[in-house]
Length: 114
Image (cartoon, rainbow, N blue to C red; front, side, top):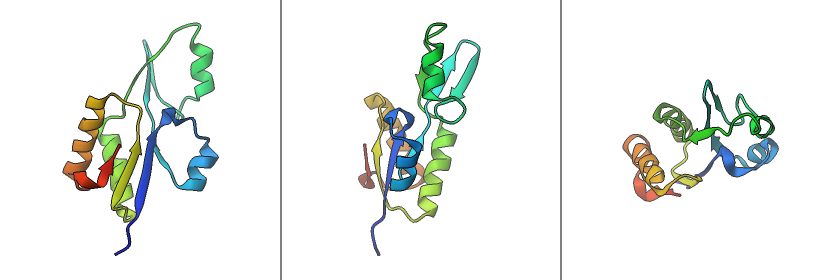
């Protein structure tokens, strides 16, 4: 059986859409949270739009929710990926939580690197 490695990053990676597509890199969008609205980074708000709003409000961010993570990793599993290399810019505790979610549902912990 051949090994297939999935590369996953979050939306803070600063790689262009073209680079992500050319290299087959998956990304998880961070949540961009304002007082009265919430967006998915690079999905329904661009980095430029976030920068332009800085004069009005500096948003907070959070990692994607478990359901979004589940959908992403099920898609990777369906494409026969048996290793995941993640480049995520989250706190160590969040990375462990993410690793536990992935292991519980999709792939063994030994095959996940962050």
